[in-house]
Length: 436
Image (cartoon, rainbow, N blue to C red; front, side, top):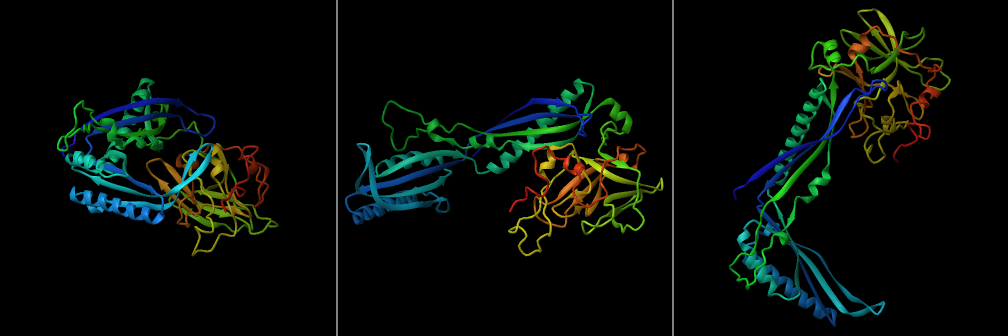
């Protein structure tokens, strides 16, 4: 069947927000919406076979005959067998509500029958044929498209393009540009209207409808997609600072706080990452009585000096939690627990991250050349969705000369007051919200 598509795209402004003091980059957020009107090529039928009687045996026998008659009709109408399904077969006592009470009236049996057809010309014959079989009711007839998933993907892409176009126009109106996307979300509720009832398109006629005459007007069904996208907002000053509009860095918005400090004498640092510019090591401790100073230290090779990372902003961060027992089947459960997801509400997190009985250092560091960041991955060895935590530190800030305000770490492996400050007053510590 020839497909016709009418596409309309809109993008609705949600807001333009700039954070210069809380570690979040300025951004523009928009909603993008796209709609494809397509001619349906599938019809989804749902039937109910229900009968009642005085004895269960007679009810069951009659029910079997009716279901067989329906299946024979569908077979004669060349309904594809692979789309035909019978379900929810049941029989039992028939209860009727009468006179403010439930009254037993014999027995009942019921079966649901569902099938799909692509030949809309068979609609009239099926409709009238089913009408001739007693104890059968048509619960619904809906339209659908055989390439629904492909069409939805296509529509979603158009919605994203609409969002980008709108965000670009808004930013340019303010003398700015958009950078990389910071957030992409799909509103799946708009997809609920994909299927459309054939009852809405049924053409009523004053004269009797002959079996060979179609009383159907399929029309079109809408396939909608709606997305929310936040783009980094790049000002003229930001582009001048970077000299490259494709690599967006905001010197005025800090991504990391550090102090000039290196591993103490007697510490046993473990290598976390090393490249041409830096050498990153972790200094931890194994017991509460340890005198070591836990911290994530960075040697800046060009300056030949050490710094200790104290806090990292939550911009574009991903927060995870410890695996559950079911998820960790076949693996050794971690000896400590953590749940960093509540930290997403904060602007900064202290590094190393706390757990229920230790501190947590990144186990993998990689460069994001496009974004100009170091990606600090925590617990990345667990190949379980939702466990990994990722923080972002701008390379330019880590290698820069600007000092950061030192924090009170108490030289301890255990949660200090400053670690508790990472959370709202009524929030639990990161290991107290672990899924069991």
